[in-house]
Every structure is written in structure tokens, then in C-alpha cells.
Length: 334
Image (cartoon, rainbow, N blue to C red):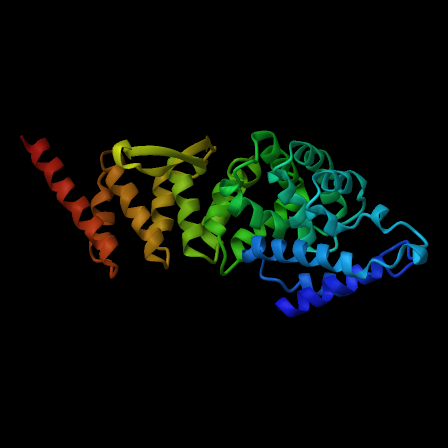
């Protein structure tokens, strides 16, 4: 894949400096970047930036052969130029749709750019680019960004709000909800939490809890329904554990938002206790323990059910619930 990327970047640079062309040929570059594993985005961005800069220098013709000024032609790859002024100008100049997920991701990542003016330009232009771009590309790029933005050291709250604004577009929101339900792999639990910053999941959490393919997503959804809130990691804060030896750790900063839940506790308990995954049944057992005194006589039925579960993590909680019920009975007897 590396060789294909380098070759496509060189072809693209040559098309820019071929003379007389007003539009560079991106076809091979679009094809190859559409196949890239975007989990290694940092690596691909660095490689392409370096190779593009080198290829442009090598392919630039002698001055007497130049019919137009290549430097005036801004392309999608100039979003990752070494020159901050060019990155800003590119964002403000580009119009129309991003050609694939990779290039829309390049635009999103400018929200974490080290130049403030570039971040400002990204805030202004991203909604416009997103509106013109294929929703499938936008959704894929958003999933990548939302899974990683807590590690972005320069992104500000106003930058995050731009992405949240894009997420709330109904077509994009529907695609994201469908992706949460249908995806068999990927960081969907983290995506669920981050999307919980907005109200786009509120009326669909029960549907996600019952239909999501990934057990951890169903577990997240059920927990949100039981607790009446969605929580997410806002960032991380350094805490010294022993400053004498320069030892410490990064602690997560958790934020949350309340959601309105119409389904009763017993209905949720019944549905989650029957889930095919022990991850979900374990949460169901935890909620039983938490609300033993509020559930009533049926609590013993659930406790016995969990105690006989084939999963050790679930059965341990069931036995603990039975033990607590016995203590409550003894206390009531006296």
C-alpha cells in the first residue's frame, strides 16, 4: 500500500506541474486513499505530506517552460502543507465535496492544527464542505474523529461544537444511528458515548439497546436507560501520585447529560436479563443489586435467575443479590 500511495502522490504532483492544466488529475490518488486503513491516519498523513512536497520539487519544470504558476493551484493535499498560510488559504478556497473519507478527514483534522488561523478557517468551512460531501464519507470520517479527539491536544470546545453541529444534521444523524446498530467491529461504544453529547440518540436508545450487533453497545445503551443519563470522557487530567519521583497518572474527566427514559425499570430489567450477551446481563444484575429495595417481591426471581447464569460474572452478582435479600428479610423479621 505504501508503494501505491507514493506512486499516486508522484502522479498527482506531475499532473500539477505538467503545464497548461487548470485542474490536477486526482483520480489515482482518490482511488488509493479510499483503500487506506484510517486507523493509522497519522502515519499516512505524514507520509503523503513528505512525498508530495518532495514530488512537487522534483517535478517542477524550468522557469522558461512554465506557462502558469503551479504555486497558485491549491489542492486537497495542500490541507497538510508544511506552510500554515497555505493550509489556511486552502481551507478558505476549496469548495464542493470532499472526494472520499480520507480527504474529508484531512479537513476535520485541521480543527487540531497547530496554527490558530487554520483552526478558525476549519471552523468556518467544515459545515459547508460537509453539506456538499457524500454523507457516507462524512459519517466514516466523523466516527474516526470522535474516537480520537480526546487525544487531540489543540482542539478547543468551539472546534468540537462544529463537529457536533454537523452530527445534528438529520441525514448524518440517521446514518450514525444506523452505524451504531449494524457495525460488527470498530469503536462503537466510544462513538455511542460521544454522540450522547447531542440529543440525536435520545429517542433511539431503546432501539439501540435491543438491536445493536455489538454487545458492548447494547450494554452502553441499557446502562444509559437504567441511569437516565449518557456519560462520556471529556478529556484527561494529569495527577501527581509522587512528585518526588516524578510519578503520576492521567485520570479521565467524565461528563454526562441527562436523557428522558419512558420505559419502566422492570421492563428494562426484563429485557436486559434476557440478552444473549453476559456483558449486558451483568449490567442487569448490577442494577438489580442497586435497586433491590425498590423492585419488590419479584427481585428474588431475578436474583435466582442471575445466580444460575452460566457466566461467572453474572452468577456472582446473582448470589450477592440473594445474600442481600436474606439480610433484608432478617432485618424485617426483627
